[in-house]
Each structure stands twice: as structure tokens, then as C-alpha cells.
Length: 196
Image 1 (cartoon, rainbow, N blue to C red):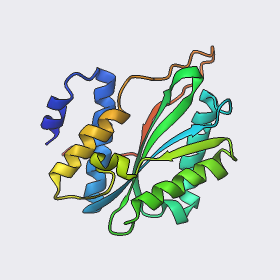
Image 2 (cartoon, helix red, strand yellow):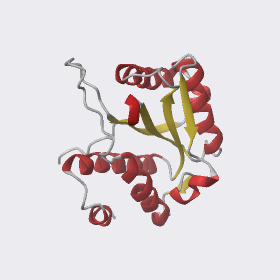
Image 3 (cartoon, rainbow, N blue to C red):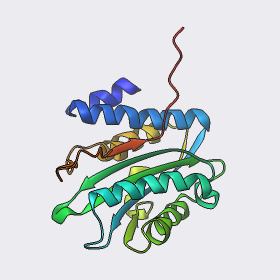
Image 4 (cartoon, rainbow, N blue to C red):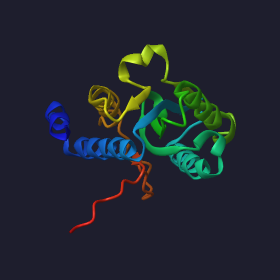
């Protein structure tokens, strides 16, 4: 299954392929944890003139740290993938995918909405905005409940959603003169296999 995905994505740069492999590992690991996953995809950004590279970086860190203390939203989360990008006019935004235990979280659209509101109201204190991608408009991307046994749905998610999240266009570069490291692609840790 993995070779098939690499074959379809052979035009990727080395950096994109590394991201894609890491993101696929998050999905595969999530399906090992639970035989059914619930996928919530949200675009997180700022209202005009309110965001910066440092701000989105800090706010995403805050979102990840706060997720541990916000069980009403993040309970049963088993994975995440987040990519920061830069659009026109220094418009920094992120594409985020949150993976939950599908046996516990069935309302993925509502969960994506909760995450978006939490970003807007708590994390950014009103400076942020969001777009819930778990709508009918995005139905073809398998932002839904995915069964471990449904390889077609898993492959569609990897190809369409992860392929987009891992793209190199709109990548950020820390060109403000600082030496601060900005992590533009982040995902949950995946347990490595122990060497025999």
C-alpha cells in the first residue's frame, strides 16, 4: 500500500516526500490505535492585519499544549497534522487535520467546528478565523469516519488530503532576519519499531 502511494506522488520533492511519509505514518498509526478514525480538517488563519509568522507559530504551539487541558474538544484525539503556509499579502495560515478515535467521536463536522471556534475565541482572542473543511463541499476528500479495513477511503485521504497538506507551494521561510526556528510542518509522534 505504501509503495502505491509513493508511486502516485513520485513528482514530490524530497522535502514533500518526507512530510508525506510522516503524515501517512500518523494515519496508519491512528488506524492501529483504533479500527475506525474520525477526521476533522480545519483551516486556521487571522483576520486581515492581525497575524504574523511568529504569532501563528506561537498560537499553534498554544493550541497543541492546551489540547491536553481541553477534553471537551480534544478527548479521544489520537493524531494531528498541521502545516503553516504563507499566502499573498503576508497572510499566514495553517491547514490542520485532527484524528480522533472513530468509535468515540462520530460527529467530525461538529468537532472541526469546535476546534475552529476554540482557535478563534480562546487561542487568538478574537484575532483569528477558521474554515471548517468537513462540509459537503469537501465530501470527495474523505473527511469522514474511516474504517481500518477500507483501503480505498484510506488511500483517498492520503492522496487528496495529505498530498495537499504536504505540498511545497506557499512554504514559509524565516526571512525576518531572526534565527528563530519556525516549524512549518508538524505532526503527532509515531512510535518507531524497535530493532530486533
